[in-house]
Length: 201
Image 1 (cartoon, rainbow, N blue to C red):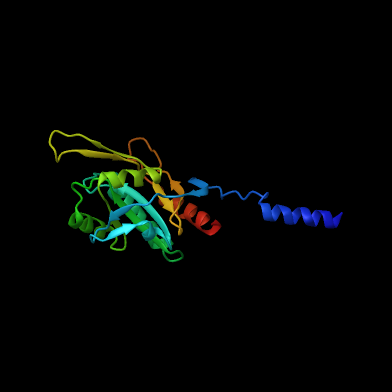
Image 2 (image 1 turned 60 degrees about the vertical axis):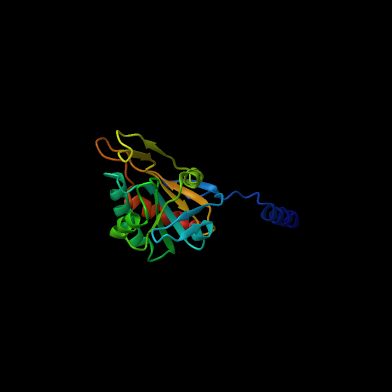
């Protein structure tokens, strides 16, 4: 009887019949991390960045643009707070992915991102490359036409994607929606959930 149970246990271990569930968090956590298709973008120093840039550390990716009046600067300030705390314990990169490549050229991205933290990545690329990358992250954006060619806004997700050290999408941190305020990430919740996820995986 004991021998039979032992054999059954070994079989379960080898075939994976014990399901391991991700930790309970406010974030959307993918039990099976999602592959990101190959991409080529550019950072704030005009250097090419690819899937390999995501590998070897945890990555927090946020969409935005430098003309953004509220969500982007407020979220980047929150991400800087989270980075100061989390980078003490985890290898971590923060990405600001500009979805306004026509206006957010190299110098503008560099000046903008370095105001918050020079260690952050200010990435962008042509829409043909950018849109599939953003979609793979589970995020979205859309250009809203203005009266002039250079007068337009960009609607974009306020969520933050978490990519693991293998370059795969692991989770999405969602913003809080409070009446009369822009949707923003709760910094303490992000830090707490990040630790749970990073320690688990």
